[in-house]
Length: 75
Image (cartoon, rainbow, N blue to C red):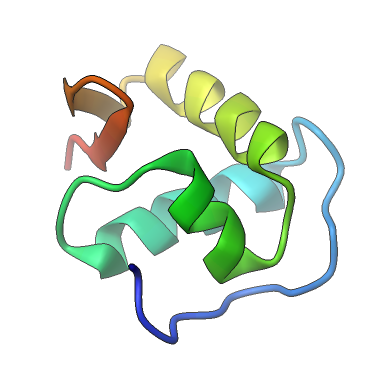
């Protein structure tokens, strides 16, 4: 679990820059590889929105998958 780290409890639009930034920040704060569902619970948004943000971050080279279904920042 990511702990009590909360960035934004209101839903954000798909592809929204704020969404990808929040997801990346939550991953960095977790300090370990996390699942999209864990990030979704922490941020108060839907898991599918987190997955879309992760895909965008992967294309930008900011996130990698060290093991199946887990993601971590590359920085």
